[in-house]
Amino acid sequence: MYNDDYVETYDLLMRSRGKAYRTQALGVVREIRERLPEAASLLDLGTGTGLHAQFFAEEFDDLVGADISADMMALAAKRVPGMATLRVDARAEIDLGRTFDAISCLWVIPHLESADEFEALIAGLLKHLNPGGVLVIEPWYGPDEFHDGYVAGDRMSKENGGAIVRLSHARRIGAARIEMVVHHAVADPGEGLREFTEQVRLSLFTREQLAACFASAGAVAEHVERDSFAWGLWVARAAA
Ligand SMILES: C[S@@+](CC[C@H](N)C(=O)[O-])C[C@H]1O[C@@H](n2cnc3c(N)ncnc32)[C@H](O)[C@@H]1O
Image (cartoon, rainbow, N blue to C red; front, top):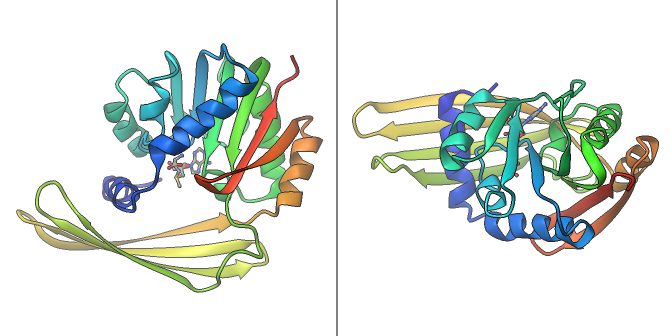
C-alpha cells in the first residue's frame, strides 16, 4: 500500500509535528482500565509505525499490532520489539482466530469507504472482544468540519543529515469523500534529490452516522470528549 519512502516520511512527519502519542496512548489505556481494570490483551488495529503501540507495550504484555500495510508494520515491529504483528484489512471480514480484552483503532476509519463498512468493522471487532471487553475508536473530521482545499506544508530533518519537504492538498470529491494529494521532495547526502507523490481518498463521517452504525452493529457505545483527541473517542463494550 505504502512504499518505504512514504513510511519513513509518515513517521518523521508525525514525530516532527509533535503529536502527543504518549498522552494519547495513556488516555486510551485509561478508557480501557476504567471499564475493565484487569485488561491484559490489546489489539491495536491500524497500528501504523507503532507510535502509540510503543506506549501500549508498557501496559499490555499481550499486544498485537495489525495494519493493512506490511511496510508500516515493519517499522512498528522494530519500534516495539515485543509486539506481534498481523496483516489485517479493516475493510474485509476479520477473523483473527482469537479474542482480546481491548481493541484500539486510532485514526483509521477515514480509510473506510462507507458507513456500511464502518458498521461491518464494528460487528467484526465485537466478535474479537472477550466478555466485557473494550473497543476504543478515534474518529476524524465530519463532512461539515473539513476545509475544502486544505493545504499543509512540512519540512523534516532525517537522521542521516538529509531532509524531506512534504506538501499536501486535500479537496472534496463528494459530500463525504476527499482526495488528498501529497507531494514529497527528499534530499539525502549520499543519493541526492528525488521526488514522489501519493494520492489517498478518505471518508468523512458524521457523529450521528457513527452512532447509528454502533447501534446497528449491536454495540453500546459512547462518545467521550478528551483534550488529547481533537474529535474525541468512541468507546464501546462487549456484553459481559
Ligand atoms: C493515519 S495512519 C494512523 C496510524 C496510527 N494508528 C496513528 O494514530 O498514528 C492510518 C493507518 O491505517 C492503516 N490502514 C489504512 N487502511 C487500512 C485498512 N483497510 N485496514 C487496516 N489498516 C489500514 C494505514 O496503513 C496506516 O498505518
